[in-house]
Length: 337
Image (tube, rainbow, N blue to C red; front, side, top):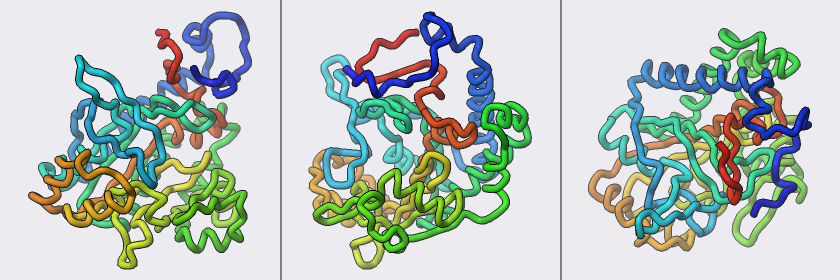
């Protein structure tokens, strides 16, 4: 069962269950408006670029965060009529597959499932806006940044008044649109943060940045920062590497609560993917179909994923993502309704 301290602590106006209590809370009418806006504007953004929306299943045999080096989430395994399978933590692999059919790229907007307990920035079930396009890291950073700006412009155009009322203003949105997003490599970030253990955690062969470190970088370099080129073993195996083989061709967009978008370049062919699986101590047989796809049809692609509720955290200047579920879900708790 989840730790009671991991559950949201919004003030209780009455003793009714949450699903009844929020019916009278203006936050949730605005949340519905934001959900509708993201659905519509995501489709409009990709239609303009002739990137195709895919209908994908929520089950998969290939999780994007396997139990190996660089994994950043716990998988959710289920038994489906006697067949062990997973509820998808990401559809990245299937979007890579889709790129081999839709030559300008593909996207989806649907739930993802994670095995961790919920906290102020993590949900067990969240909405994921993911895309995969032909090209490299710079290409996907450019399009992910444009996507966030497109959504932000739509919020200001359609929902400025209710957002200002909830967030206490819209300056954080207009400030983001007013200037280019800062960009810094992980190595330069370590230097800027003085390799402070409060901000940078050092492991045997890689380093990671803490949430406090993310916030400090935003204080130093602006309210939105692209943090790029992490240590390769600190990210999952599917991220391609630079020429040294030690740095991942990846980037996180830090804004509001911290990481809101994660993106990266993929291995073009099976040989590089197989080598990365070995380096991350992930069994290659678990990804046989993925390797066969890259063997039969090598393709240079990159992709990104945005946690939609984290985007809402930033827009609404809200500090607990658990409040931004219309219908509450947490691992180990009954789902009502």
